[in-house]
Amino acid sequence: MLNHIVIMGRLTRDPELRYTQSQTPVASFTVAVDRDFGGRDGGERQTDFIDCSAWRSTAEFVNRFFRKGSMIVVSGRLQSRKWQDREGNNRVNWEINVDNVYFGESRRDSSDGNYEAPRANAYDSGRSGGNDGGRSSYEAPRTVSPAPSPFTELDGDDGELPF
Image (cartoon, rainbow, N blue to C red; front, side, top):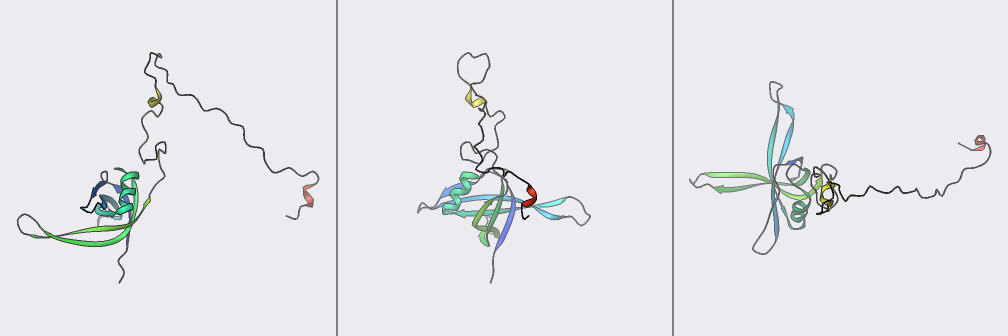
């Protein structure tokens, strides 16, 4: 039997990292996945909200690099969880037990190693506390000369080249 699922979507909230009694990390998160087709009348596309659980190092990875709104690709196994609600009704939850996660888009800000949306003004964090007339302590990057090329031009006629 084969039970493998791959989805791509955006996180609906920040991942929730918890630890079991044996200190095993587990991250829970929900991925909003748009369907590839519209309704029967050709209207708006529907969105499915899929619960996911990642364990151990994968859980820590998700918690460190993904935030609400991040595009994520999740690969794992679909499993059901049966439980009873407060009224005694039998319920079933479907979730993905995550094996692997991948970035669904490029990183937006790599300054501190975390996956975050860029600040409104990335240079404001460098302001000095004194009276500087509103000027930032940010310095413009210096121009760097390119390294010399290891290639040299050939003298003579280009017609002699075999290509």
